[in-house]
Each structure stands twice: as structure tokens, then as C-alpha cells.
Amino acid sequence: MSLTEKPATSPERDAYYKKLDERSMSALWNVLSDIITPTPRSGCQPFKWDYDEARELLMESGGLITAKEAERRVLILENPGLRGQSRITTSLYAGLQLVLPGEVAPAHRHSQSALRFVVDGDGAYTNVAGERTLMHEGDFVITPPWAWHDHGNESDRPMVWLDGLDIPMASFFDASFAEGYGAESQPESIPRGDSLARYGSNLMPFGYEQQGLASPIFNYPYDRTREALEQMRLRNEWDPCHGLKMRYVNPLNGDDAMPTISTAMQLLPKGLVTDVYRATDATVFSVVEGHGRTTVGDTVIEWKPKDLFVVPSWAPVVHQAHDDAVLFGFSDRGVQQKLGFWREHRGG
Ligand code: GTQ
Image (cartoon, rainbow, N blue to C red; front, side, top):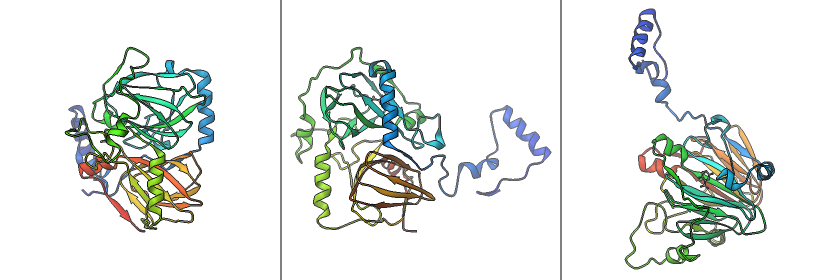
């Protein structure tokens, strides 16, 4: 018996295993090396989705089904190693959602948390718990668990954003609940910009107490994120593995902005080649600006603005920026850290 080898079989042992099987039992020594592995063993593979191809397919879906009929008109980004499971990594879901001018994706709510990262288009809105926010390219927007949300597009251009949800986590725990609102849109009961004004200016309403685990800010606009990165760049303090990388945080406590999905934005200056890095949180990247190459083990991914790619757990990663590049990324890092699983390794 060992952590890497299985014991031999014999007719007596096989007969015994059959008896176990009939009673819904099985012998640990036959599976131990499969379930407790010396390093992460994942079905998740490195992969890139070319945005131009994805956009063409998305626009085709626009002629086949409305946002209303689909409830959410989304193309799921399925990891090639996890086909049919609606996952981009083992623990996370991702999709590209299209809302055409004049359309509404009807109000509903669910246990799962969602993030929107705006990839293409300007000025569509999402309404979360009564507050509407207009979305612009590069904005990071949160839908907390069990919050009513509907999306709409009153602009004159199609709008595409990346959805990231903790759907596989909710199903792992068998904790999924969902319901429709009963009307297409919920009333706009809170003035636009309220959350950002209250919680996003290094101020906090006097006596405010946190409700739920998500950040009270639900739209982190790109212009502010970009400005922060640009200001930081002046000091040339680059992390050898990450360039300039900032986490999105809940201003109340510095935790990740979402309880189940950790999000970050990083700037990689032209010419930077990062040191090798690996971590146990498989990460989904959305390219905001610039061109580059990311090698993930033996896989080489060439990327350009709006492309999406995924890096599996524990795969050695090197980013290379051909020009100044900005990458948005999300993963289950915060969950793993809270549960004591997370590991990282820097260097070869
Ligand atoms: O916008 O509420 O990609 O409920 C998947 C499920 C988006 C959403 C998705 C959802 C949504």
C-alpha cells in the first residue's frame, strides 16, 4: 500500500471487493492514490477563446433567440477538459453574455454570486437590488448571492460581458436556490451611483454595518482601476511574477470584493517577461489592453485585447507583454485561502 501504487489483485480479493460493492462500500487502498494525490491532478486544461470568433457566434445567437426567451443569452466557456459540465475551471463557471439594444434579460435571483466583466460595448445596464449601473469596457460589476438582478441595453450597440459565477461551488454543496421576479424589470428604487458614492470614496456612512459578505460597491469602474495602476507604475515596483497587480477589495474589511470569487487587475509593461509562477487557484483571464504571450506548461497562448484564457491549478505560468498590457483575472483563491488549501510557488 502506498500513496502512489495500488495493491495487486487476487481472486480472493476480487470476491471480497464484490461483497463490499453490494453493500455500498469500497476499499480505500484501491483508490487512495487517485483521491489523495502528491500534487494537484486536474481535468482543467489551459485554453484560449479568441474573441473575434466568440463574438461572431454570439451575434449569430442574437438572431436565433432573444435575451427574454433565453432568460440569459450566454455562451458558456467550457474548459476542453471538462466538457458538458458548464465549467471553465473545476470550481468556476464563465460565459459571454450578449444583450442587444432594446433588450432586457429578466429579473431573477439565485444563491450563486456573479461577476460581470465588460468586454465589448458601452452603456448597457445591470440593475442589482434596485440600483442601476451603466457598464463600460473594463468595469467589474458584482451581483451578490440572492440579489434581484436584471440587465438591459438602452444604448445603440450590442453589449458583451464576461460572466463569472460560482455555479460549480454551489452545486458541489447542493446549495442552489433560484426564483424569477415575476416581472421583466425590478423598479429602480435607488439613485444611480449611490453605492460608489457611499462606499467607494474612502468614506463609510456613519454607523454602517456590513450586510452579507459581498462588497457594498457593486461597480468598480475601469477608469479608476486604470488610474491606480498608472500611478503605481511611476515607481517601477514590479512584482517579478505578476507585474503590477491589484486585488479588488471590499472597502469595509479588505477582503476580496466577492466571498467566492477573487478578482484582480494587473498591468504588464511592454517587454516584461514574468518569473515562473504557479498557484492552486486556476485562473480565468480577460485581456483588457495589449498583446502578449502566456506559456502554461507546454501550452503557448498568444493573446490580444478581449481574448479570454484559462490557466489550471498548479500549472507553471509565464506572462510576456509585447506592448503595455492589462489583464483582468478571477479565481477561487479566497475560498482556498479561507479553507487552508491555497499554495503558491515562485520560480522554476
Ligand atoms: O446574468 O444572471 O452567465 O443567472 C449564468 C446564469 C448569467 C445572470 C450567467 C445567470 C446569469
